[in-house]
Image (cartoon, rainbow, N blue to C red; front, side, top):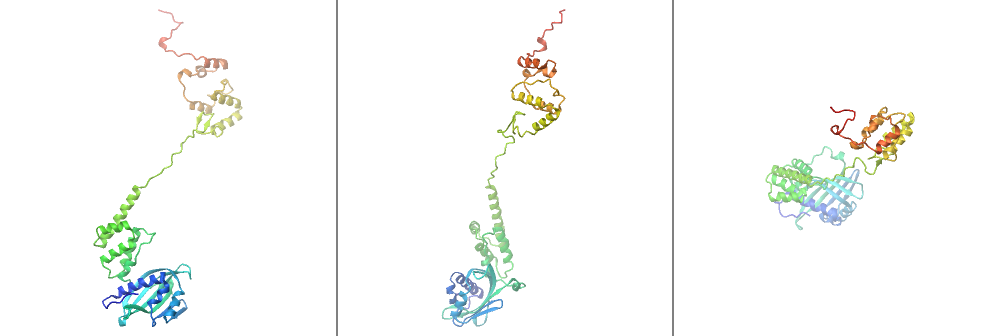
Amino acid sequence: MASWHSSFVSASKVGSQFVQQYYDVLQHQPEFTHRFYNGSSTMIRVDGDSTQTASAVSQIHKLVQSLPCSRIEIKTVNSVESRFEGIIVAVSGSVKSDCFSGYREFVQTFFLAPDEKKKDYMAMVDVFHFVSQEDLSGVVYAKDPIDIHYIKRDDSESVEDFLFRFTNETSQILGADEKMKISGFVLGVRDDELVEKLHENIPQTVKDMIDRVKGFVRGKKARAIKNVRCNFSASVPMNDPNQYCEFHQVVGHYTDDCVLLKKEIEEAVQTGNLARLVEEIKYRKGDYSFDANQKESDDEHPKRKKIRMEEPITSPDCIDTQRTSGVKGGSDSFESSMEQPQPITSPANQTNDSQEGP
């Protein structure tokens, strides 16, 4: 219950204190809500076409207990002085209850009258009305400056988004000075680090506060980017060393998966050179040397010639001179030349037996 001290207390302050106390008790201790009323109080609850009325404290208590509220969100509070030192308080918000799913919008109006015995304001009239979005369309409620302190940042809302919403909502509240807006933002932002920064040097204007908050947000983002550690996965090697091709004698793929070998086998089957291809593969593996005097020479087969170009270059001592010059000697001369390579001498050291001296 809002305390009544003297006529110097403003209507907005009394209304704000009453709303804060009333809805806190209604949500957490509803069994004590009847203490805001007396024997002359009247409560009316309107829900569509249904209207319920209670005119005694016991009836009011029973009506309040019939609608348990698990969560109440207050959107607007407006207070104005009335006759006989009374105050009219208009509240709008949303309520969540086990009696229905989700939230429902409501408008509640109180007529508060001073009680000289208790030195408190008592709710003499209470009209609670469930409303729909159609009922609220076109209705504009004037906000009281005290509403600034009810603007809070949500858990899922960033500081930057809250700053935008706060400045937008406070621009529609008339009569709120710079200091009230600054204090309202500090209370509602719910960011300990930012509040500590603002308390170190309290801003004197809203513009100064906005600039400092934006600078704080930029600095926080920069620190977050700096602290990011990029974990890149190890690059996959292009050639798998565990895979070996006996045809090419290289790693990177299996012999059974060799596309070029498959094409060679298909062409060898079509041309009747499959036996020669098998001998060549065995020669590559070092099993034995094959007869180069076959039906088709390497120079006449463009793809097999290409394979020769892909073979590793050996030293001059291992070059088969008879194979490069021709195959007239047959397989015997080829094998003998492989077994006994001829040494290479320079022209200066060679002697020409056919030439006679001067």
